[in-house]
Length: 235
Image (cartoon, rainbow, N blue to C red; front, top):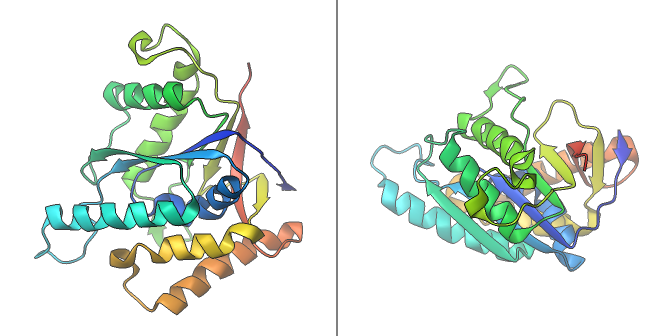
């Protein structure tokens, strides 16, 4: 594990659900935004099934979650949010999704893309990684390496662009840690902005976010951090 420093001019975070990026990489996004980077957030799902109540309307849930997403993104300093509006549970790493992601990457032209690690399935014997997370991760990998960088893939989606670095969150094989001490307050605030998803005491949830970031920082001697699996893509 190494403490890494990244200073992108343009970065992109691609996640499945409205709250995923804040939980996984909110500190990093806030850090980059504070440094002047143009950070674009791509959210694939509309969040419409993010409720445990069968009486809830999927339309109303989606609207609430869109509002929460935009509030959280503003707290992190995100330059632009791109919503693909897939219904929850209906993401597949197919040609249509890969083409859409290639188009976004070629339009925004980030040097770094942050996304979920699709190889992480089971966590501690108590959690199975959501299918949307895994399908999102695989689609990002396939869209970035190699499709976006090679002009004969999806030629209608603009000029080819090579992403230099992939940072994969929620991984069982982290190899880099990023110091998010300056971004922890924004990360906590962004997570708490997803009020419909909290289901508990805000102070307790804030403490969980800080505790996990503190745990990630201990191996490298910083107060708060986020850990990732890094992939440096060849030219």
